[in-house]
Amino acid sequence: MSFLRSVILSVLIGAPVGGLACDLALVLAVDVSGSVDAEEYRIQMEGLAAGLRDGVVAEALVRGKAQVMVIQWSGSTRQEVSIAWVEMGDFAATEKLADRIERLERPWRNYSTAIGQALVLAVAQFDRVPDCRRRVIDLSGDGTSNEGVAPRELYDALVQARVTVNALAIEQSDADLTSYFYENVIHGEGAFVATAGGFADYPARIRMKLLREVARQTAQCVTCSDLRQGD
Image (cartoon, rainbow, N blue to C red; front, side):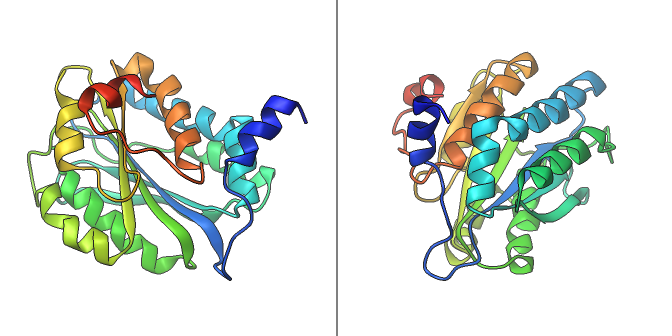
């Protein structure tokens, strides 16, 4: 193992602590609303799979025996668990998960953007996984919520469930989306927003976002300027 790799991994998740089953339970919530075309959907899935295959990300997930699942979300009645919880017990598990993500079929194409409902579904999934030190929802999207419960109305439920929500704002057509996600969607200790200028930037940004999410600690940015420049 190289010195640089050792240094990076020294701040990433290690063995589960305090008798808990794992270090991190991570829900990957992917936007498949009507504003996402077929090519953009493909970019998201291939980029997410590539991020999980990153050597440092994969090793950190395996060391922490992380649990990972995938949700695809759109309008208020169109949210699904596409891949149920998978334990990252070894590198074969991370590779298998990446393969499954690449092969996922898109369930819907022409519906609204219900971020709050996506969070409701995601939070409910933590009752179906062994207790982990951190519970994180990684939500990506290219627009503001326009249907269903408002994301801000879920803050109390997120606190009660011990869930942190991080977001990836894909600013394909909305240059203020990072600000919206910062003010309305993210929640919890160390919560952050990563920004992609468009779908073409998604693969690089989701990789950096995953690296940050598997870290033991994350520094919370306090201004939208910091959020745009920090990842």
